[in-house]
Amino acid sequence: MSIIINAGKMIKKQSNFWNNIHFHPTDAIEDDWGKRILDTIAEENIADTVRMYSMLEDIVTERDGKLHYDFSLNDKRLDYMTEKGFGILLSYNFLPPFLAKNPDLKSASAKNKTRYKGKMIVNSIPADYDIWKEICRAYTEHIIKRYGAKTVSKWYLQCYNEPDIQPYFMGELDSSEESAEIRLKEYIKLYCGFADGINEACQTLGAGKMKIGGPALAVHMNFFEGFMKYVKENNVQLDFVCAHDYGTNPGALESGEIPLDVELNCKKYENYRKAIDKYLPTSVEFVIDEWGASTGGFADCEHFPSLIFRETEIYAVFFAKMITRLIERNAIISKLMICLSGQHEMTEDFSGFRNFFSLNFIKKPIYNAFAVLRKLKENVLYYEKAPENTTLLATSDNCGNFALVLTYSSENFNKSLPKISQEIIINGISGKTKRVIFWRIDEKNINPYRVYCEKGYGKNLTVEQIQELREISQLRPAEEFEAECIDGVCKFEVELYNNGLLLIEIL
Image 1 (cartoon, one colour):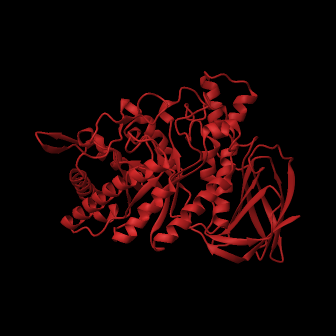
Image 2 (spheres, rainbow, N blue to C red):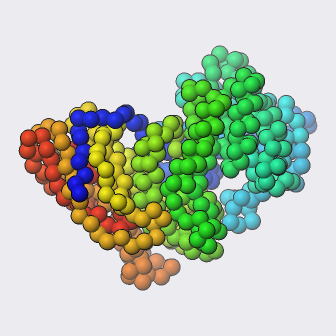
């Protein structure tokens, strides 16, 4: 069958919500290796908004009963991010140890015994919520004075990270549903102090209102709904609501209990959306501030070999397929932010961590998928049904240019599908000829890990091998040609490969 696209039949406008990231660890921003990653992301226009942590534990101390602030590290990080032109989602966390009710409650939330640079997360509640409010006020006043109200008003200011589970909040409890209800009561106090502190800073400076939100949910829907119910009933400011969207987890993936499946992420979005629509007006933005095909930012192939998908074409296809299906569902998402983590724990290339680059700065297919999907246009076009095992998103701009993204894979990415040929027909196109460019990510294209395996390279790559794999990882067109348009119809053939992503530009 042919895929027939109607260039004159626009379904809707669709802004880009997917080119955003969560960069972790935040304190790598001040280091050369972190800047190298972010420099490349900025130069190649991969991300619009970056989520980062305020890391209040680096900023506030108490001496002689008084709060003392040192914003030097914070300023170094935020100066760099603003200079690069990134939008910011700034998560206000974690507790300074002196403020903790139980400062001995600590979590690493990392593969090794500590976070980056030997730090730990103090996951106690505050001993004094008024002091927490004052810290939020002082911090907000500082960033408004330094970066200006106009700039900060465009940022997303977020209260905490994953307060519904043990690693981040109330570490004395487990991560059960019952414990989530207990945590919710404390998080409401935390959020209200955060909101009041920010608003006091704005009033003092005459800065207007900032965009604030929470709860950066991990998993517990009772927590999510309870928070929104409280906000609604008590008229608490909430400009965006945010949650995390992960599909499977390393253990379930490894056992085969929960395989890779785009539908898991899409259904989780739908559950969030139903809850949001129940409590909040449509003006409240929904931000998915972390997503991944699997949880386990600090899990790798050492213990879970199935996480190798993060190094391969499969993750690139997963991403494109997920975006396509979310758009087909008319998803209302302000920002969708892939979580990058584990970079600082790598000891070899292709180790299955959740990041864009290997140890030796070789681009992964998921990174190049972000570059490819940046090419999509704002007008979503109608098309007749695509073949089995494919997804298609057809887009155009107002200047007669088109970008089509096709994926070809089994539902769980676990079957080897035969190569197929497919005719593309675009009706209602203007001009006599069009330049057609194919961008491919699959087993044979833009895939350094597959070359690494085919050539039998060892873990300790030579300088020459590193350079070779870096070159292979550079995004480049797979094919370019001129297509003739007859009576407003443009036709051409494409080949689709197993677990393949194909973006077609028609210019």
